[in-house]
Image 1 (tube, rainbow, N blue to C red):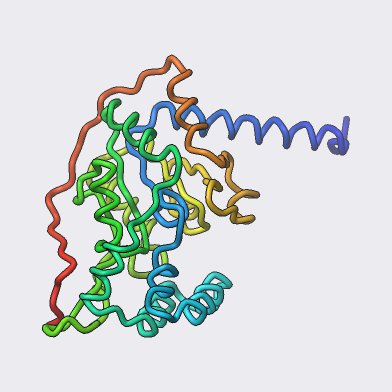
Image 2 (cartoon, one colour):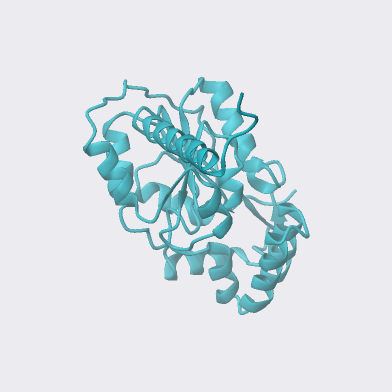
Length: 265
């Protein structure tokens, strides 16, 4: 009786498992009943908070905090608070930034979201970014603002920076996972796909994850995602070239009102 697998047999078994997993995520993509996207470096080409920091002339300092946070040395909320304390955008600064630095969409994202909408598949944006920057992106892509999970900046009556809303799901570590858990519990999604460039997207506990490297390649995501793509056109082609049809699944969230002009209390 054979006591163990040979190296070649073990290698073949691993290859089969990887192939099966790859087939599974592709099948899940073709039958998804909900698709969630990260925004920075995924839907959009840049990291909005870094661009806002440059606009406020503190880009290098904020980037240093970002690197520290990505190294696991502080929680997302602590890093967010530290970066915003440096940026300290006034309401007027923020409005100027949004007007003069509109977010640049990644090639293919508009076509992909149009295709998902044509198939009645709900689309959500889940990000650690800010409603004031992300909401215009959602409107451009015809995504209802109630389908946007993002952070809310707070301002004093004179328009000066006052902080951010710590009640938002995405204001702390694990926030994307909480947003996905909320969606699945509320609407019963069974085949929810998360697409993003970062480890927080990969760890968000979606039914399926597709890593995206069209703007920046995160090695951890590239090496661990079952399916990693560098272009949204890969996902478009997968949908258009496959005969599987998805059942209409159109749901909407209870209306949530957001404003870029919330005053601190």
